[in-house]
Image 1 (cartoon, rainbow, N blue to C red):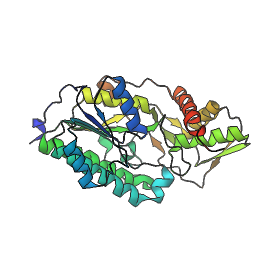
Image 2: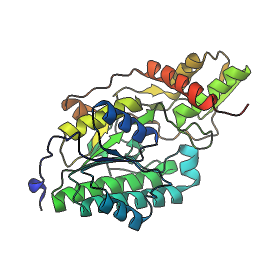
Image 3: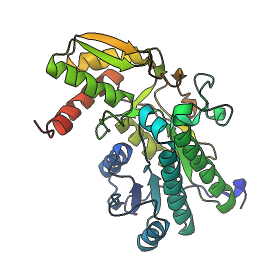
Length: 325
């Protein structure tokens, strides 16, 4: 089939089975909450122990036994700069296997609607700012996470190819940096914002005189609360059908130093903030152009300072409260 023969998506049936791949992760759990709140009654989820998405035969068997009509592919191996830099083979191999297996099985069983979620790291390190969707494949990637980025780029092209060859109205969305309840706060594997929350909260609890952060503090980053992302995903499934992926963000960025200050305020830390410039900064700036998303009628509702404060509360209640003393 040609691009012009792609079928328009029908309105989402809230009684039809919806499979959220990765439903226990940061993104998947937020999407699950949002779908539940919207009245979807047949949500399908499998933990990694129940279904290893890297196991192709197991994935195909799952789709054969589960008559899902909508798939949200939020499952992925994720991590911060340190983890991506140390384990590029794992990030490339695991994510390619997950994507190929789920997308191929969904296509074989003619899943009528699918949303593939990637990451803003797909764009070149020195892309023009703010970054439009057209910047994809126009330059070199950030070396510290290029393996993960390549896997996500492959997913975008896979969705685009399915639309062209099979006429299924599948779509892809690329979120900016995410944070919120359910995030990974492990000091060796977390992204920048949860890493800062843990570091500053521990410093506040132990009365440490200073906190040292990676890099110079000058790179600028955009952050989106994961509940806002979940709302945007449901909105796109109901309102968007196009060959191009869609950026999902706020259109506002801050320096890492400014973010660190917000986190310090949220945990009530007043000590000295230091910067270890021997550690990598990563991409100097990464701000998404969200014009395409806004044209569909969606905007975020959770401000960054309020979102950080609520995430600190969740971290203390859910992570610190369960930590051994």
